[in-house]
Length: 191
Length: 336
Image 1 (cartoon, rainbow over the protein chains, first blue to last red):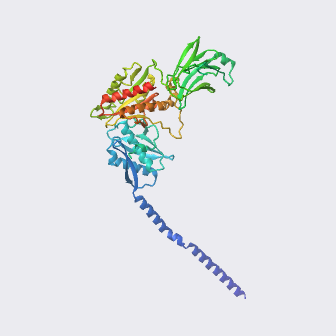
Image 2 (tube, rainbow over the protein chains, first blue to last red):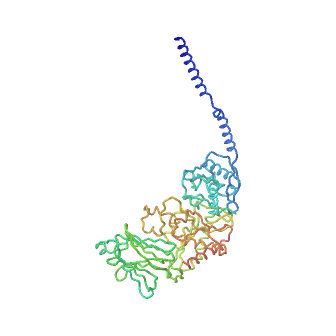
């Protein structure tokens, strides 16, 4: 009778140990979801990579025959608006249609940054000739080529300020007032 | 009633005024004005509010301001201005007392006045009339400022016809020659030789000359001629100082107020600049529908007068261009 009770106790303890071990093992086993996650993440990353590699179509504005003309271009996608805007202006400055005209031919893009309020600061620097000579009309068209290109392509950018060599400047070529902010002027675009 | 009697208004300030202030009369520290769409406002800033008298003449062409009791002291020169409602301000001695006479266009409407405190001000609002009447010819000389663009090391553009600084100077001299035939016009050039001037120096020269109108002359390499007026854009969300024409006369040079207002003078002349721009654009184009171009111009924003910038195509006949500009200026002066 005494030995039977002892045997029953041992069996119960062993059964408990086996059951606990089984539960722990089961809990440690990876679920179906977590097994699949790395694959899904890889797919998403691959999709994002595909989008980043896919060129982004933009509209460039450049002076042409006494007005602004609109032309299409593509830029590499960027992770944020600031980088995209920089790429858009780099495309404008690299575009032969824009650089045929005074002012855009004579200046370079030094830097561009966008603040939280949606103001894009375009920092320009004169080219090697160090002197920008243009009529008031040519100067106005060049400024609005930059402004329209940014404001027509990026809705996060609300207005533009122009700097010369990192500083506020009075004018670019002696006529237009750079101390203010600019918004787009579509009336200067040839229809 | 206006045609029968002089309208005499005794304006006793409703605000508390000490007896001492009344005995002392009125001391005017500054006089300024602003032109609005419906009326012109003239503000007399006084040391202490006191009773004053406002008299409108029987023909409605002038308003006289004087102290009700005691002397009327002017500690500042009166601003020189005319805007189609007010033709000018002058101080006079009448029966041993100083009065300020505001000369009005014949077609102006009601004249209202009120007092503001802290600092104490007498404010006179003169409403525009419904039907403009031609201003009778006067002997007053209209000052025209011509500004030949660029100069010195700044040659401007270089065209086959020459450097822009030389082309603009030649054109300005030719226009001056034409305008000087009219004895009612005084023509001032910001430069009459090859000389470098900053944009602010050009605006300051015009303001100091008391210009009725300012024309900056430039050249373009292409064949097109354009007339620009200031694009009066106001930045959103920024605190703006109300442009008040003539305020510079009351401020010390380099004062904080002057710093704040410099570059905002043109805003008070938007209507006149538009009218001058249309006159010149139509003379150039030979079309009654031609309009000036609005642009953010660094030079014009500080000019305290009707102001435009003209860009003549380098290939345009200089004599024809000079004639068109001179004729546009003469037409504008006749109507203003």
